[in-house]
Image (cartoon, rainbow, N blue to C red; front, side, top):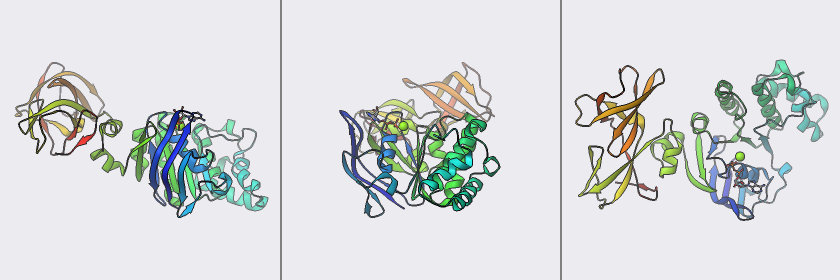
Length: 346
Ligand SMILES: Nc1ncnc2c1ncn2[C@@H]1O[C@H](COP(=O)(O)OP(=O)(O)O)[C@@H](O)[C@H]1O
Ligand SMILES: [Mg+2]
């Protein structure tokens, strides 16, 4: 089922947590809802779930206006960051709970709980209580509990935040697999750009209550609408280098770029660290100020025009602090931003 927000606003007194949002969450897809802490992600999720009442605007599930519908009628499965399992119940009882609430027979509830447990790979653990399971296993139980009612939409609010780094990687692949197998329309809230990039079909990025961009991970990375989105995606982050346009040319650290019809102005040039390459013959020579070795790749910090730039290269290239190297650009577009951080297209 498709979820559509129309001019959706939620105010908490003077705080506008969600500001006039118009968004379509695609049917059967996994949408990553991404943005820094406090930007309104959870609020948007709880508006969709019906736990918060909208201040204004509308929410549609397909063509049905659900803005005023009671939460329990919406057919939502919700998973929280802290799992929120009942500690005195076994995994099986936790998963069955929503069904017993709906007056499904005990026999059928048990059957459906077992199916869900198989889907999330915890069928061996059904007799354990939450305290006897790892964080990842508890999160699987929470996902099974959310899915057992066969919801129309699965909403996950930072479900991996309490897990350690390795388990997070494993669980995000699991969530992707479970989403694919069930085909349920899913909204996955995270503040972690890499997490959103890795599992989403579509990313929605927010800032201070405002929608910034909706796009596939690749489109958003390659073609951000503004400096905020460009900076939010990618690690190591994009370089934003000061440059000016003079007489139809942009000079950025010695590279000269055709400025098209741009008038004389100061701009920021966005260059992703991996877009640079080492080229001994280049006319642009820079000094390595420092470097970080990551194994497969090495990150160089170099003085570039008036800025320090990050340059990501293959570790095959031996480098030393203080050494001077030639820099070239791979054949990829650079991004230009004005002083307000808005994208300029040349
Ligand atoms: N129940 C509430 N009462 C008052 N303010 C709230 C409430 N919930 C959220 N807020 C405020 O709304 C804004 C968005 O919060 P939230 O949706 O939780 O952000 P996120 O999930 O992106 O971290 C924040 O400024 C937060 O303080
Ligand atoms: Mg939140």
